[in-house]
Amino acid sequence: MRLIAIDTGTLLSACVLMDTETQLPIACVFDTNEVVREWIKNQGADEMCIEILCSYGLCGETVFTAQLFAGIFWGMGEMLGLKVTGYHRKVAVKSLAGHGNAGDSGVRNALIERYGYFEGNKGLGTKAKPGPIHMLSNCHLQAAACVALAHIDGAKPVDLHYSSSEEKKEKDIKKKEVRAKRDAKAAAKGSVVLEGKAEVMDKFIARGRKYRNK
Image 1 (cartoon, rainbow, N blue to C red):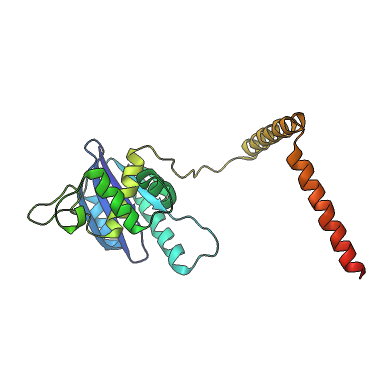
Image 2 (tube, rainbow, N blue to C red; image 1 turned 180 degrees about the horizontal axis):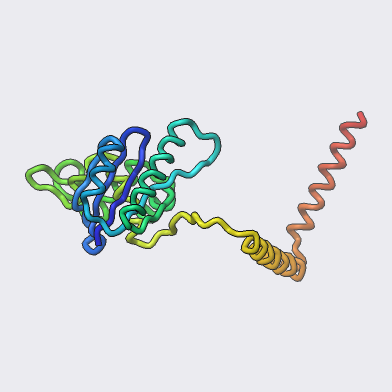
């Protein structure tokens, strides 16, 4: 199958077309979002996967713009009849490199390790003797390839399903059951840790009262 993987940006996006059977890149493009959209239409892909940005706090305008284009690509893929899947960067990187904190150099090294070392250009090969990932010449294309490999390897995708009120109630009930079992297990063992925490908290409160009374 032909899989398109996209690493979206505010102005420029990277897109890699990969064969899911050989796990080798067939073609790629790193250009403006408008050019990438036209490029996708002509690739005859079967599936699409996109890197979805994940918020860890305050986000700037660039993050929202990149996410906007991720949504545009997602809608475009569905209009073309493709099965579209999203992956958070940490999930994709962890699937390839073994941990989610790897940077661009870590992704590059993990790709080289996966496909083998070739002379020249630090493993990607040369123009005369190109390696299997020679076309992935920059970090953006390598990030897109990382998303593609995460999809092929069966990484956990982004869950965009919005739970109904009944589903939320069922989840809350399950959480309460799990919490009750955990508390019962801790009580049966006569957890010393909880008692120790309670003692420390009592001492902390007593010390605060003593400080306020001075």
